Length: 214
Image (cartoon, rainbow, N blue to C red):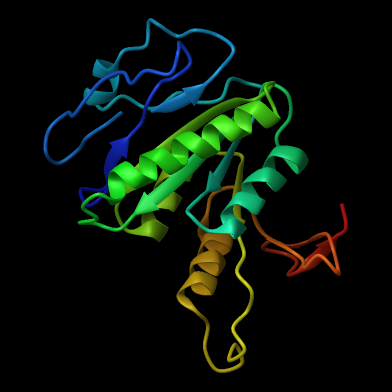
């Protein structure tokens, strides 16, 4: 992990919703949010403080990583990943990346991640759900976490193209394109169509804006 990337929250809530572990120094604070049908009381916060590698998905079970934020598009992408990508026993990792020096943003992001994670587990109890809130450069943080956690699939929300897309791309569009081109796993960018049209537009490295009705 690069020196500019700091894990702010990583809570383990599988044994009743309480936070394990605390701050592990000023430069790297760790904590996890994990929702599981099994208790993991043996996993203590000190393991995170020691800089150990986060748990990888066991053989035969994939890890689906979803980049989340406060936008409705991110929530739609998360739900699409649950219904179209994640299978029973898979890991779903919600990754929220914050810019440096966010003040109270870390607490707000933790509350958001907690809410989204609980919603995922309620919608699909048969998957393992965890959430990470990390402070650092967004693109490099996402790429490094994909590699570190050995994610099988990365799901992103795809924003509506700018009307001036012929001349320039928005920062959001550039971020999605960079992830699709550089992430070391299958990367899917998803945007829900309007109610009148229905379905989703899905982009990959090989196909852009494929319309999926379901």
